[in-house]
Amino acid sequence: MNSSVPDISLEGYHTISLEEVMRASLAERMEQKYILPAILLPDLLQMLKKDFDLMVAGGQPVQLYESVYFDTPALSTYLAHHNGIGDRFKIRLRKYHSTSTSFLEIKHRIPTGKVIKKRIQVSDLMIDLSMYSEFLRCNSPYHPEELEEKIRSYYYRITLVNKVLEERATFDYGLLFTRGNERQDFSPLVIAEFKFSKDLRRPSCQDLLRSFHIRNTSISKYCTGIASLYQDVRKNRFKQNLRKINRIIVNHYENHVR
Image (cartoon, rainbow, N blue to C red; front, side, top):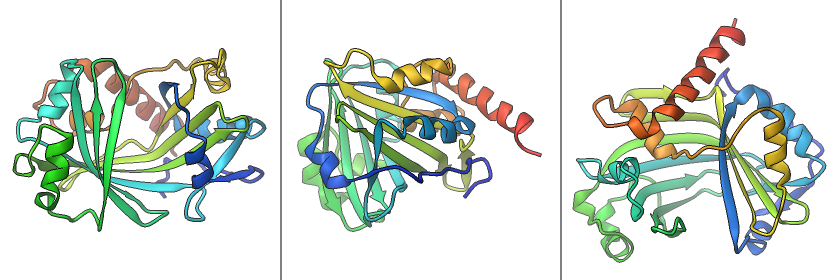
């Protein structure tokens, strides 16, 4: 584990299975994302223990996610997000290490803001996309021959579910992006995402983070990775997040690393 990742204790959490979480899927939900220093994660997890259960998948309370993102040579999906196009796609292969399963996934954001995710199980991350040309054509405007690997991402995820099943929280930490031999280490930060029922007036996670003076933001891991590893791309839309991330990283190495 990278030295930037804090020591995390999940002792004392009541656990809930992946199958139970899937059955309790939130139908009409709101979503919020946050960027925060990883140094805060141990305290946050302790504070949430009373009201949240810990999801366990494949016997593991912490899941390792490995993703391969695809785009056109001109970075069409990245630029669609950068330019604020409401109808856009993300295409990735993702391996869920705790369950030893891999999927080809397509995320389609429609102009209303709703995200439709389609996926098909694959053997591993080394597949030939042409084997899944029908799946790609049916669920996106892209053909396999248009797409090439752009970046890979690796991170650990902790998933918490509110005991009354109206809130769900994920904490992604140890984040690393790679492009060939290039690396961008974001392990000093955590990306948190909260999903909650539209009927819930005051999400407890939101109140807790506000007590740390942390406000929600919009962030895409793929776009953040591209903006960090490709120097010649447009990135104005993401500069605010990149500055915030840089402040967290600089502060970490100035104050917490000896």
